[in-house]
Length: 130
Image (cartoon, rainbow, N blue to C red; front, side, top):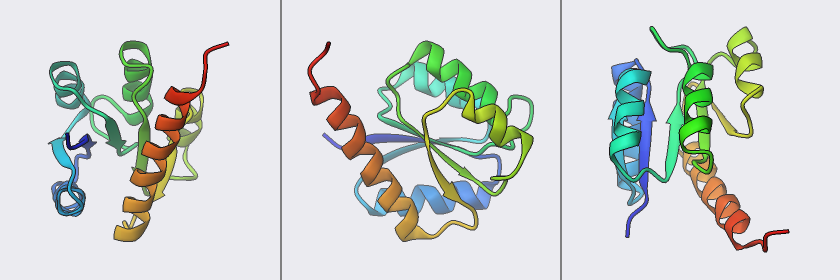
């Protein structure tokens, strides 16, 4: 079964770019222009990984991360953002861990982050519980 990835970004061009890149790599991709729609899709679909912008209208990245951690604590998150030095980033760190992919997006960096995140979350699941 193909992994399903959710992309939340309010920039239409960036959302399409990420969508094409991930679909081309063999993933199933859902995307949403804002947090409310993205969270709804996560509730209604089996999502394996969330790729999220930080600076979003209405509901920002940290608020989305907090909600996802509450409802889907095992869902891995990759932040795809141009605001690495912002207050939003500091807020996001409170709800870590996550991987970071800087904008402008480099295709290889994005795909490597997705692969590494999946390898990491598989390793978490294989570890015996204490």
